[in-house]
Structure formats: C-alpha cells, structure tokens
Image (cartoon, rainbow, N blue to C red; front, side, top):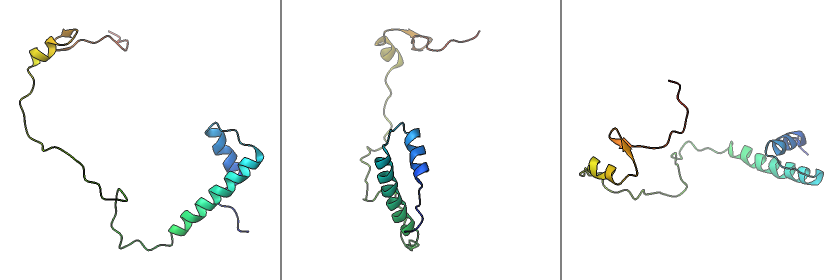
Length: 101
C-alpha cells in the first residue's frame, strides 16, 4: 500500500479543530476516506485542461437583473417623516459603541 496522503495524526488534529470527537475506528475510517479523496484530487492534476475555458459555475447562469434605469428618488422629508426618530437630516438610532470625546 502506498503512503497515505493524510496521516492519522492530521485527521485527529483537524477533528480537534472542528471540535469533533472521533473513536479510533471512526478516525481510521475518516483517514481512509480522506486519503481516497486526496488521491482522486491528485489524479486531476494529470488532466490537460489547457483548452477548457475557465468557468465559475458548472452550468450556465443568467442573472435575472432588471435594467439599470435612473428613477426619481424618494423625497427625504417624506421618508424621514415615516421614521420613529430623525436628526440632522438622517435616521436617529440608538448609540451602539461608546465614543471618546
């Protein structure tokens, strides 16, 4: 059998970082599964993809965007009149962070 691409210690380290508790059997099974995945990914390195155009999605995606047409903005005074509180031409909200003066 070839050297594993991921060691049992690495599996246990990642499990600890993910706050997972694995039994010895689960850790060995996880090592085998991850080793198989990494072996598959390593095989992809051998593929010639020089003629494959880069893509962001595996299927064509058309964004259903509306046309960018300028429209009249809401009146500021009318909008602020609907707010519970306003101050200095904007919405007044409770203080979240302390500010040193």
